[in-house]
Image (cartoon, rainbow, N blue to C red; front, side, top):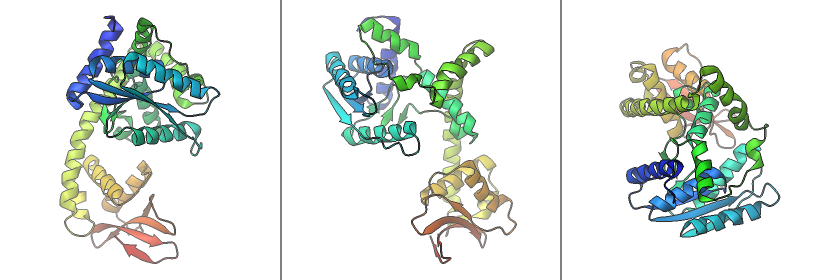
Length: 327
């Protein structure tokens, strides 16, 4: 590994992550063959004790098997203990980008053999994620960005610029694969990368990507404190069936809504949006005798509904024909 500025930046980032989360030094790396994951693999080999490369072949483009084979060869050439190609099938449900991501993560999770999987997301990716979350308008949680470790996914490069990963590949004489999807304008993230962020950098005088990533980190720290307070509130309000409306109503809105959100998730709700959460919160703070609020996660033939009864929030599975089975 040459002692270039790019090499030092990536090695320091990986070393810091390993010291904090994986002192045993045995990890897997999700390798696509692109510059970010190739540079991450090189830095991981230099810093970790053992690295296993996992290469996902999405089989979405002609020649994808050759790209995966080349990535595997690069991994072993860099010094990975093993390099495994995972061929997956993407059905496109919910959009090609989302379906490919879901299938990729599922394949990596199945193959990691208990190891954390390092992913090559950079500071630039973090900035794009924050902008996408901001557009959803779902509150601070949606713009906290990606965590550097959300078991089993590790992201050591969230403080490293994409330019550094490309430079390290050049320093090492590696030719990264250029995925045509990364320049396809039909994907929102690509337009953010190629149009929106450059314009923001020009208009605001630079430093936008770093500022967005820094904001995400600050919000994540704040969110951790709010989550802890919400857990305490949830424990207190859950004495008895459901949740005590009086206990919830006395709490600050930010803490109360987090507690309600966790309660709904624990009860089986899925795909919770801000509209669902505020409607359930209104059962506490704006009670006018309104009916229950349906939330995602129902089984076939039923609806999962949050209701207010006798001063408590309850969750029920309501049969579509009208009968109800309380939880």
